[in-house]
Length: 621
Ligand SMILES: Cc1cc2nc3c(=O)[nH]c(=O)nc-3n(C[C@H](O)[C@H](O)[C@H](O)COP(=O)(O)OP(=O)(O)OC[C@H]3O[C@@H](n4cnc5c(N)ncnc54)[C@H](O)[C@@H]3O)c2cc1C
Image (cartoon, helix red, strand yellow):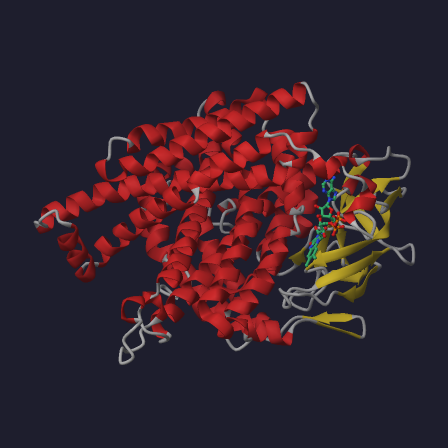
């Protein structure tokens, strides 16, 4: 897969040269880690992705999930892959060794997850949700609950889900109607219907453990009255063996545009009044508890967008090198000229570099947030912890929404690179586009992510979190200005960040005077601007590092300093080609995307409210 799906070289650049993850290994928590260990893990992840998961990709899509006689079956090839994935310990790699994990830093896990998601994220839904649900029990469960459920989920023996959505309650979780009635023994009788539940029912594991949001009878309406319950599909006897069915009945599974190998089920709890749930954590704290899983899942969903983008770019690049079509533009009037591989046409090169720049920038953005999570976990002072946490808070909705939206755009452009063949099922990119779209919708739609960013995150910590983020960009601008090769490009980053910082301040002023309506109306475009800014920042930082590396290589090789000499060296030295590619990504992004930011900020700054003010009737009938 190395060359076609994920650039492992770029992952290593990010980990070692840009983030400097080796710093983590000096802390006791990551004392067992070293560069050799990480290299070995990345190699194992790639092998798992290529040899085990990737072969399930199109087969799983074609076969899909079935619902027959009340039972859900996943694609047959998922069984062996699931077994191997769990046996290798990937399901809980980032968890502590005490619970069976490998204590892997989040930043390293992100690279592994990118490989897995690129290989088949419909498959990854099963272990992913299981790990998330087990994580909730680990953090909020009693010892008894951990012994009963968590360990068997972390090994993959039992599956897990997250049950929030109901037919009448999607974005607005405060409207849920599932109820929990107290029983004399301290457990609860659960009644209600949950819809769209990923991995809600399947035949990969003999039991499935559902964390379910429900309202205890008599508790207040809205999100503040919601509690969370552990509801197993099959009850568990005291000796750990499986008991009777817990009145959790699968109503149906959805027929979907993509991720067809992931079963999306409607679950009916307590139709016969016999569904028993155990309270997880405190009463009425269900949303807070579920948010732990949702925040982790939001980053994972950002990684799904990236995984698809990565794979789609890899395929498009390979295809562009192989597909021969049309004479080159400089031979257009020559009837005898030979056709060339399409990578030689300017428009195809533009599309490829656009994709490359976004893929690398999003990889770095996700990696940065993961690194912040690692640093937050080992921070020695309160201030330091708060600072890392601040980056995570602000950037989590950006990772989720920006990377999924751009993931779709990149998959779409990959189809353009293929031409008509891109639309044909025999080629892989149409499936990537179908599969990718869901990442924009679940875990809170991208519209809801944008509301979270603008309505909550910008003002968090009195605005200090977002200011610290801008401060990081300013720091990079200062450093890059000293690099001759990039001087002319970094001005676009400086201008863009100035425009975004100005608009953010304007949002604050509007919030105090005219109300939040204009920021709320523009939350999604604002989030996309912030995403572009973050990507432009990460790419520029990477280009600065690449320049230093190249200078050293050129000096050692005795290159004559001419562009021609440097290009010649790149043809024979893959490291030179790689670093030159990093600089190309940053330069392209700086000149083609970053200058649009100030115009987009200006547009929002005009304070237009037409979509709010116009009559509903005027939208048409
Ligand atoms: C394949 C699939 C898998 C899923 N897996 C799970 C799962 O495992 N567990 C689970 O609990 N759920 C799951 N979901 C449900 C998913 O999280 C919801 O579909 C999603 O949260 C949106 O809810 P909704 O579909 O009811 O849309 P709605 O809430 O009706 O939203 C429709 C539109 O209105 C917008 N909107 C709604 N409210 C506002 C507002 N206040 N301000 C601005 N815009 C707003 C939305 O952004 C969206 O554009 C899954 C869904 C799918 C399709």
